[in-house]
Image (cartoon, rainbow, N blue to C red; front, side, top):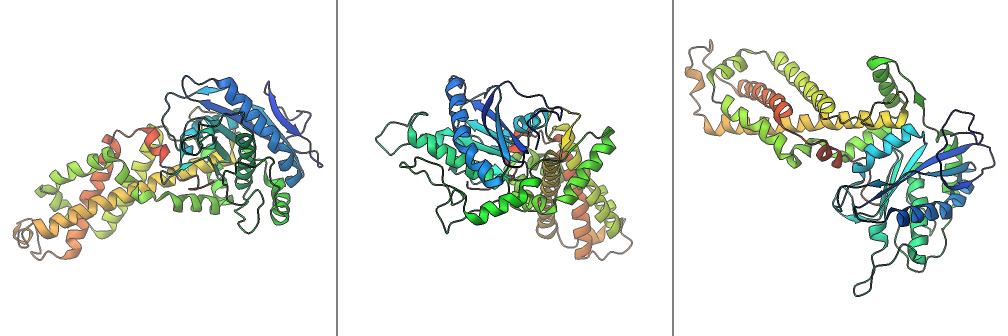
Length: 417
């Protein structure tokens, strides 16, 4: 949150799309980003975004009792018309949040937007990253047999403004209020809408309480250790947001959506499992050593993917780091750790099946390298864990992951507006 005089050292963008003063003298600065499909006219989308901000700013100022200013950034051209998940806009949004700097960012795009469950939605918001994404594609849809609505259609205008206020409410922590017809009720396109509904009294009181928490903590850490310490402190201050995003991510199931990673992990283990040397190592390794080797390998694989695939936000290194950008980075790392744990479990399960069903039961007990000819289930589990650990490392090193694939699976956004 900043003062209106600009004495805090911020560089004011050239175009202010909308502004409303608050009673306290404090202000929330919002970056308004337009991301358009190739061949689309960006000026029309910019005008639409500016009008939606102008229609929404008064209600936001009234509900929070602080001033709001929407800064319209230069448009960005997308490489194609494909549908996108909101997480795919995180790189550009977090970059502008730090550059602005802004307290939150709203992305307006004309390409279809899908949730993590592949459902088309008009918009989604992430309280963790303080980023909201609005898609005009869904807002412009019309009943069958009728032409698509234009951006200047009155119904599109007021539903867009309502959606914008609704999503900003989610960014600030407000939840759905289905018991009334206020702006925080579940969003549905209303063709007869001609104004922005108000926040109900309970939500407004909540927004007044969180108004002082709107400004994101910023730091200028020195060196890698300083950045690491700031990320750790941010996660400790906001454990609930990180854990909620991690729980929604279904990270252990991520390898099932990444065939390159899974193939690179499973393929070498199918060779290693038939190698006598791997069995010698697995049988003579202690349980503690096998467990420690597995844990270290999972962490190393996650760190390797994080840095080699450049999955931290924003991609360009900045001197200033905001708390919410740090929270996104912590969540990305934990999602990668969960994905490596899931990959380990996948490979381990395959190896155990081979050990128990494919290998003859007395084959291992006849090996001369075994001091005790008895081969128990624990020995098979430990050896399978050792071989699976090697598979996790090879999967991370040779998986050939695309950073966009990982980013598109981040569950920082809910499934519905």
